[in-house]
Image (tube, rainbow, N blue to C red):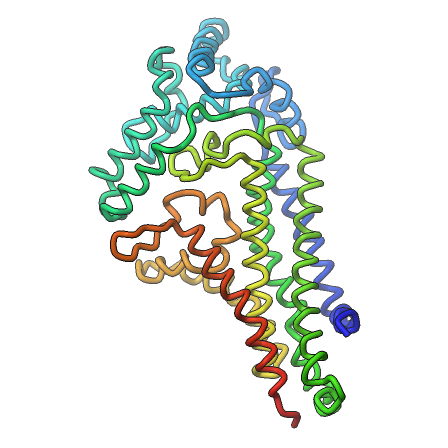
Length: 403
């Protein structure tokens, strides 16, 4: 029965168009992410796309490993040597240690949100060696005397500083463009693809009423038990299977083009997690976590769509539900009301943007003196809903009465 329901799902023209749209989203994401890559080249020109990735992959091998005191000193000394040798044209020769330089540019600055590209030109090797201590001091100032003091409670600030102090140092760095693009691009891709995946199951239950086959469906021998269970299974298998296919295809495409190096490098030693990241994760571990978060988010959206389809016998209403979280995100993001902005933390799309959720800027749930970052809160909250909705959906539809 489950196989039959899956065949019915893909028999409509809308389903076939949805599959083509998923392919278009995949290709668009790959093109936009790779095309936007750039770095200074050795010939005094700006490299783009795959050419830039290949060059970074080649020259950054000399700065692969633990970003310890020796590597930090070496980067500053090499920067000074290149400045003396090439003067104003030195920037074209600094791609090799660009990841280390960028982390310094975010750290040795007066305030938390400042960035100074040329800070490495003013650092001594000894000052650069204090990179990790300076990061913690910068965040402490931000939370206690800066703008962060108004955004985070004392308990949240204490939790952030405790987690920051527990991060591994020295962190592992290297060429990570493949894994960085894999995680970042996958989040953007899922924001576009998750409503399409949910749309595929929007007619799973309502189609019986639309085809006026509900009386026959419920009067059959297994209509109110096995047939209903088969519909629920078909929806879950279709969405989860297509999600994994989409993610694995994306992973093969990106890593084959940009390289698999850097999977063991630390996520915290990357720009998107350096100052505000809370987790000791390698890029490979972060990708596995992203897969789990994405699966929870996609299944929740699909189950919500199926629930509307079963409850109201309306495919258009269920299809609109599939796009509701995206529309809410756009509406709330455009709003200036702080109360609404707090709701952004709770929307399922937070599960897709792992790069943002690894940061303490994603927010916290505080109950009394207990503090939890939003990433595990979202995983537990939507994970429980994903476990609770299938039996609710099953009981709801098996008790439906045909017209």
